[in-house]
Image (cartoon, rainbow over all chains, first blue to last red; front, side, top):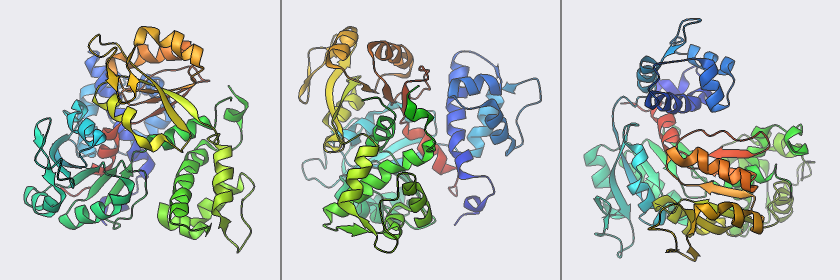
Length: 210
Length: 210
């Protein structure tokens, strides 16, 4: 396990930093240069006290009463999150979802660049998906190792997710974003996060009036 | 605000129930009929004590030492989450992401059915996306009201997300799953959840060794 995963900063705090970063960049696009925990809190529906407390883990970034310098805070958060560099990302699965991910322009300028798209299907291998030519899953180990890719996005059917994840980990991937609606098991030193729209929808229906 | 949003069950517990439901359905597919908090915990990387505590909010669903009847627990969780019915969902945005969502088969049997796909672009309106014909955003109010749709998924550019959300809320939508990478403001009685892959990736890069 890396030193950071044993750091004293709660993981839930780390999980909020990307939201702060996103909101700050939006403020910057609006040509603002200074903000406050109150303004950020209003935009994110998070209390200003929580935001100040979260940022205090990293030294605070602002002086009482003068607010936060947006550009400075963005730089600092990008450094903390290690996205002041560009990470290459492999996408596995060239179905509708993999295609949408491969075309998504929202990765640019946020620290990530899709580097490869893989699939198992002979009908898809060799086809173009946006700017990529789909590579065979059988080439994952060689390509991921030689290109030093550390991050992968999994857009394969649930039944294939675990075996593809095993392959990625063996090839040296250290972080997986899994879109398949199934929990997968990875070694403790590999990061895993999930995107499953149905879990979000089911969370919300709890609160709906029928 | 509905009675449930003032219920004493923490929202973070509600958020885990869809994960339990998903894991239970997977066990059912594996033709198991009984499980335990230990087995669920192992699959979900959540402690068995946490799972027992979460389920105890709803009466427990199991007897000490005998485990959980999978089918019964699935039924109960579906009832709690109100997904023992099928909710119609509107998709706004017929770009690559909206198309992927519209084709996604993972909503079936989990309580949701895509009912409409909307877009603003004259090039897209009237085109087929899977089984849907893209409707104009200008028809949102009329269609959502007449069909009684309560849930929408937003797959539009960040710049348009707030105005489309306003339109949806005005039309009677009570829950929005927003894929646009921007926080939006909705009335307190409207549920909002977000899917932004970059926030997950940035969360993981914090822990990566460079």
